[in-house]
Image (cartoon, rainbow, N blue to C red; front, side, top):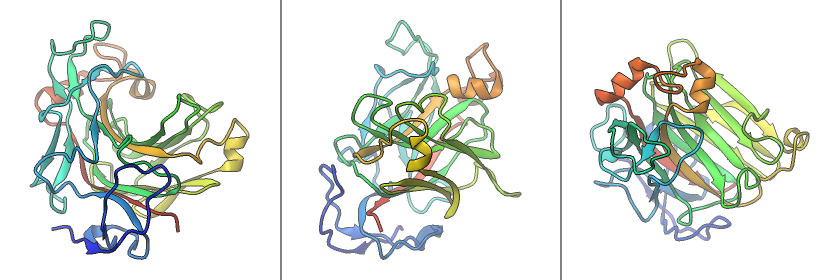
Length: 297
């Protein structure tokens, strides 16, 4: 069981809506690499309930489509579930799974062969500055595109985007980025983290950012992997990271980022045939042990 130590929250993060937490978590538990017991916990989902907590998460549907991705998002237990018995997870885990399901997509301009899951906390929990982290296990499947990230409520890219973890199925690395006006899409504020020998993305890792008024610090397992400062961003455009952001977890399939990495254009854009077969066999998923957000230090 994940252990929660009770505290009384004195307030909510700027822009937070509908967050009702009365607990704090010792981050030394569950193998978390940083001690967080002295920080105010603003949001947490340990994914121990039998199904997704809809008071915390929205589920995105088929109307949404970006980046030439190959999936249609569908609110279904097939694509979004809570599993109680994932190896290495402490209690339950959120599972986002792409599924081969041709003929289901309602958009004729896309006609995707795959469905998948995407959830976010928009209008349920948003925050400005602090620490957000999630413990995640990724599949060995080239051409997939699961991600953990933050986005503002305005028009993109002016609203600002923080990519805490992106993965295109090359198991030795994950990526991070910032997007905003003048540094979006092919953003120069980007970095890859290559895992040490003996580790890769298919292991459980804690992906986090410390977000302040003048920097975003990216971490993997408590190790600083990249620092993006207000001065760095200012060389390219305006700093857009002083407004509320909501959290997103999604599992995309193929699309522009995998395609630019692996060069695959057919049969599926950015997705090799071997991975398409893995998805057909049900062997591809992102597993999320927990998500936690803390107030600024």
